[in-house]
Length: 244
Image 1 (cartoon, one colour):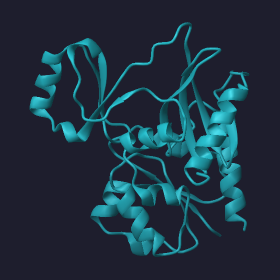
Image 2 (cartoon, rainbow, N blue to C red; image 1 turned 30 degrees about the vertical axis):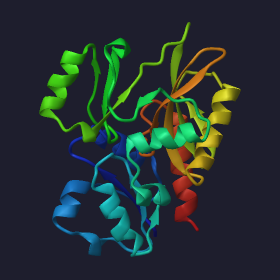
Image 3 (cartoon, rainbow, N blue to C red; image 1 turned 180 degrees about the vertical axis):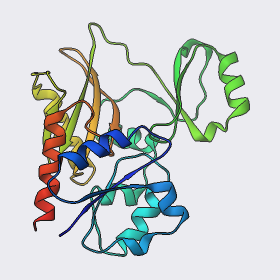
């Protein structure tokens, strides 16, 4: 029988999400730490029948995806991971496709009138902090390479609220106990899915009011922490792949 392999990272709190998927699935699910897997070069333990899901944001994902792609594995979100996007590239890509995102300062150069500003590491689950003046910015980049970070303007809209949604095979799931089913958000999610070549699984965060909608985070390695329906939808999707 085919099995689902869920890669997690020791540097992230993703193990609980992986265990929920494992415990609620009626097909074999194996959880593997990606750091140990790469260190011990365990590629021979993966077969062409295996289904791969990355429940982490490790920089090792691209390496693993490339090597497993040669084995013919079924890699969920394969094209996305082979492309090896950075967070900054994702945001630029979304903006070019007319998805509203927070303003980026491409060259990481701003004047005193632009503070406060978000400073984000250019990788998923990386460092995020808010800088309030030029002095703090200069001290920070005195210790860290500015090429590893990007600057982003905070989104400020009146009467705003935030929401996280989860997408599985084109279906949009909302958080537990949240009956809201926003047509605009659903439409944006479908557009994002298409932009990334019909990406199979992701979570998307929005800040919005009745007139404006900004996409503030996109994650292709969702753990479905806030949605039982979404996790069930993911398990059902994997089950269909297993039974093919």
